[in-house]
Length: 90
Image (cartoon, rainbow, N blue to C red; front, side, top):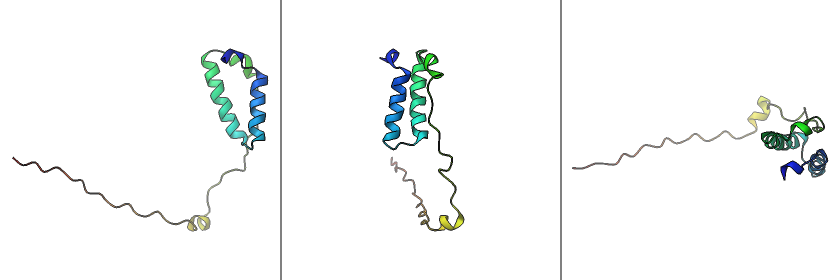
């Protein structure tokens, strides 16, 4: 039950996910969802001060340089589809 979730349970879950190779940002998002669910039932307040969130990587993700961008194929132009209107005959 939701009311049975403890700080120890959350820490165990975080540790398990980190050992599986999941990044800290993903674990934080998952714990964030849990905190929203628990907050809806006013159960998060008692846990919030004790739960430690993993650190996020700051070096992940960057914009491609123009040279790198040129290495990818350009998308094909979309063909224009003509609307076909039903022909009404009387």
